[in-house]
Amino acid sequence: MVRPLSPLKRTAIQPAISKHVSRLKTAELVRETRKGQWVFYSIKEKRLEEIGYALSHLPDLSEELRKLEQQGLTVTCE
Image (cartoon, rainbow, N blue to C red; front, side, top):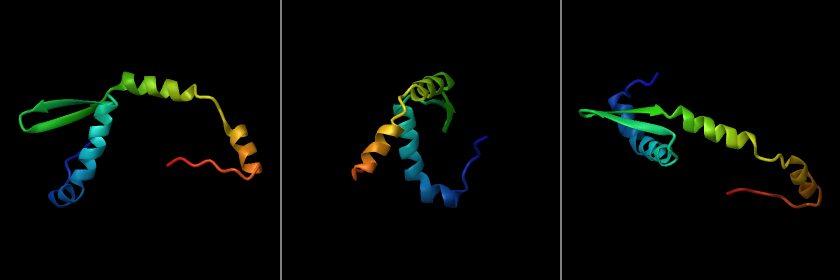
């Protein structure tokens, strides 16, 4: 359940919330419904399931990473 933020907290974190909601909309994970001055967001469950399915079928590269570490090589993601 999502509740309105208090006025003090809302002004402090509004840019961060807007940025994250924008990313979720770009990824098509949320839908936006406008009712007057209010905007409501809800999760697109089918899209979430599709992404979960894709992630669950990624190959496990743990062994390859372990071998690289044993060779003194490190892998980082930035």
